[in-house]
Length: 285
Image 1 (cartoon, rainbow, N blue to C red):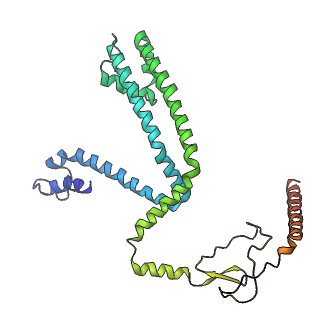
Image 2 (image 1 turned 90 degrees about the vertical axis):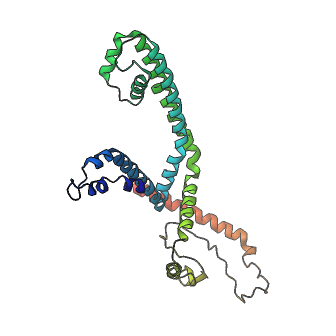
Image 3 (image 1 turned 135 degrees about the vertical axis):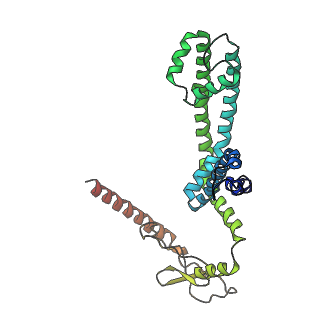
């Protein structure tokens, strides 16, 4: 498309015209291609901003919204197909009537007026003119009921059902789309830049499970508020002795006190619930 715009650039044609001033865009040859060049420029701008939609992967919610919009397109296409069918049918029927309504004499004119009615572009004064032609007015009423009342509400119902069906998976699709773009971009990343990025992650250093509790290497540590995920039971069980893989797994020292642990866990939960209720009551007061 850019090559096509270059071939139709008015500046190039005016540059070869000796009668036109320097860097002029308005000349005899340039004016012939001015409209075609403007159409190509308009299409290029639309394609440019369409390509910018790939930046939506930077936000998972925005990417999910973009994916949902794409998944709704088949439903909109079905609506436009049904609308075109009814417009063609009523345009042929109205053109066959014996009437002198302005804009309803031929099939193309009638189809244009019917499209305007569907999209709310038909002015109210034109509806008043239809009262002089009862048969034409009856056909227009039938068309409005069929398209505006029935098809538009059916489109809303279709979009609602399709959105509910894809809502549960849209975040997963957004993450897959981000992974696809990342995988495609990795081929163009220089090896040196990639190595510097990996070195900044420090994957060879061990991360901490807690303060002073050194864990395993190969991870990225992310901090969070202590009240975000309250954990009262340590999920990591530690055993003293050798770390050799050939050594037998030590016996669980807590195996015999399961009932006592369960009692303490239940008591802890009750205390936590009571504290939450008390804090909630103080806030309401």
